[in-house]
Length: 172
Image (cartoon, rainbow, N blue to C red):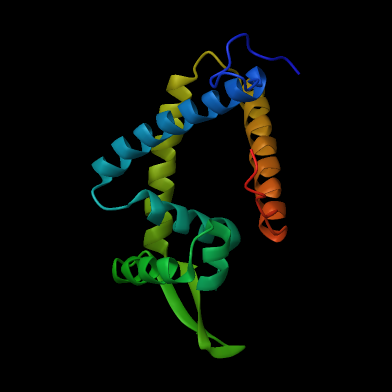
């Protein structure tokens, strides 16, 4: 493990590669959010959270609101409110679950699919222009690395949620 020469906190060693990765991911997130903000603001209605819901429905198909919430890592009440607004806008449709009429199934409406495809086509065009010096193989390699990092972090978080925290002794 390579350590930086100057730690952020005196007396605490800094893991330079991990910190550089964290800084790079943070920069990437900020850059993507700027692009999203520009495109979503221009769109005039679709919020980032709405696009996330629509993307899950496009990828995974019809499902219960609770499943959506779990995949998005938010409370079911949050998704329920989002779905009501998305349904009112004609972007999703809901129907009773034949296996349990107390529960509804949500699917992506044709208008939602069209709006999402338009949005992501614009994102893709912007990304291609920004990364014009990278060929397809380099972009796919970067995507693979980012997916591996995201998966590893997600797995660590899942494990941490299943493991009860160790009580602090209060001794320093």
